[in-house]
Amino acid sequence: MAARVLATMAALGRWEEFAMHVRAGLQNELEPCDLKELLLQTAIYAGVPAANTGSKIAPKEFEEARLQQSTEPLR
Image (cartoon, rainbow, N blue to C red):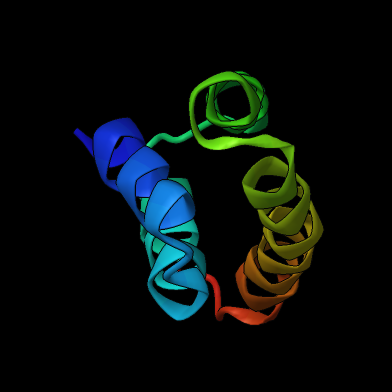
């Protein structure tokens, strides 16, 4: 489900929504390899510029998620 939403947001150029759904996906089992595949398909079906923009946004969200995860208190 998350992949379809991400692909739609990328194709429509809704980058704030794309970033939000990348963050949500990372919290719900979205793997970086899944996102790479999604962006490859985006390039084919929605155009290279959309995939390039998504490829710039995704690493920032990965890093933000990694930092947030490392600063969360242990339970």
